[in-house]
Each structure stands twice: as structure tokens, then as C-alpha cells.
Length: 82
Image (tube, rainbow, N blue to C red):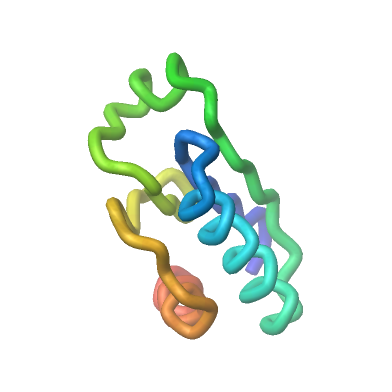
């Protein structure tokens, strides 16, 4: 998949950090190069209209909100977005 952009919006808490690491691990297992961003700037979070963190977005589409997804769940989401 070309130009895959994955963003994790969070407050910097342990759960948000876990989701970010799980995203990195899932992409590595899938051999997918992606632009991964971990956004903790509250101004950017508010501008994105985020209400419940952590949020996972793939190519600017919110695919999960308020959950700490495991690696297998993230892989399924990424496969579905291809």
C-alpha cells in the first residue's frame, strides 16, 4: 500500500503509548512502510474533533476511538483499508 498514513491521537498516557507501539509492531509484522504519527498536542486533537482517546486513524479516516487495540486487531483494520 502506497502512502499509508496512520495517526494515533492520545494524551500521552500509557494506554495511548501502547496503541502507538502496537501500530508500529503491526506494520512491521505486515512489512508495510507507513507514515506513523503520534499526536499528543491538545490543540491538534481538538482541531481533529477527537472526543474519546486514544483514536486510531488510517489515511485520515477514524477507524477506532476510545480503545487500546491489540496487534491482531490493528492488522485487520489495515488490511480492510487497503
